Length: 512
Ligand code: HXC
Image 1: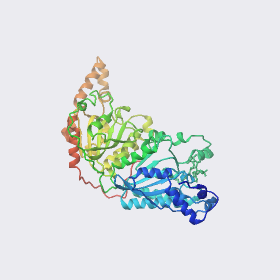
Image 2: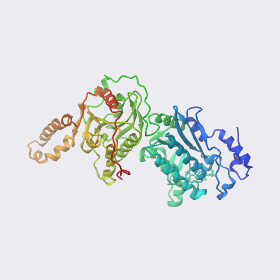
Image 3: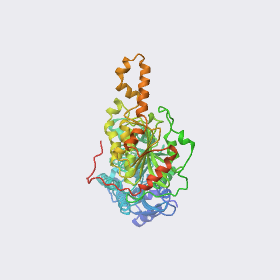
Image 4: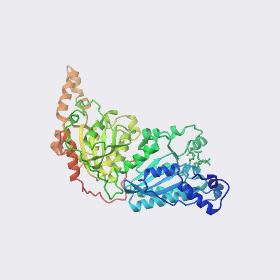
């Protein structure tokens, strides 16, 4: 049905009853905002809430405009049969900007989702606080932010950025668990290019300022970069399948008929024996988890660590794996932030953590030190120490220095610590150690090169293996690579009801 929108938004004010009828008609029509919600929910399950809400603002000619639903559709429905609450902003209504009534609709939905213990999905397509509504709009965002924080760690909150979004339309997503953007059509910034131009006279495109690539590769603000809306919504549906409805439940089990014993020869070749040779840790992940179950998060950002959800024997786990293919898998500021955030997400939602360790240490250097690697690295340490879900780790190859301790070691509360025979656990690699410990001896030698090699070999023999750690009980077992899947499944099953309490506190204090 075609509707005369000028009657709704133009100067000519129709009778109240006529407005209501038009609003109803528009609500029944197919807008992009509505279509997005229909794609999200199971077919036929969507129920709209507050479709007839209208604003009461009179300034800047708003009294002459009737804005359908005040620019946002709020609804509930199911995704794979489980209840979900979601809103979708309509850019065709004053740029999807958020006024008082618009905010009230979202806040009400947040309250409903929290009370129902169901995920909350935000489809944002908004220029932020509605300028014409002043403090009412600002206050509306405050109400939403407060509820985002109250829901944090209680129900999953997922934000899709579906168009150009500014101000509160990006701050609210930043308070949620996951943010996804669409390549080439969604943008995020606190202040848009037009405002920047008037304040600092800087010319910058929306893409440069806050395009999908900027945030998925550069800042890490976006966890996902999707090719279009349809893919985005399908992926959000899939992501929900790895999460419980709330923090008192467990993520849904998906029956798996794949064997736990794999004699795949790749197990013995996937990690090169030469410790300097890179490899893609995703291949190890794929060998260990249920077929095609790995769902990567933050794929494009801080690629020296790989994180994501997967299933082992049908149960959801969070995987944290150093990635030797990028920067030799070293931990730096971004990798620490990425892994820390994912660990906290898993812990909040009862998802056990499996760490695959092959790490040469923290990245040394002025740049990292001056940007605060001490604090950012400490975030990762904090997250592992704080997590009370089952924590399992497998050392595949290198585990050096501080990075050995941080990556889910027994000392920071690892429940089960395994290692492949190729594991090397030491304060540092042989070359560095010999340089620090034996410089004078090497300088005095007749053949310093030969002496260096001899000392390195002795160091490697003594330290670069899992034996000492196993003999101290810091490792629970040294296992053959092909046993990994079965061992993890078994330990996960005996840790299923793990319960650990931390001392009472108002909140912990995460490093800056
Ligand atoms: C009222 C708005 C609006 C807003 C956009 N529109 N933003 N109306 N309040 N905040 C209206 C425009 O006037 C226009 O109306 C229509 O929406 C489409 O906007 P365009 O600019 O034509 O669209 P586009 O070129 O796609 O640019 C989108 C945009 C830009 C980049 C988002 O509109 C923009 O920069 N808007 C302002 C962003 C901003 O700084 N917002 C304040 C945030 S402060 P017509 O009638 O012409 O179609 C905030 C407070 C809380 O949110 C923040 C906490 C940090």
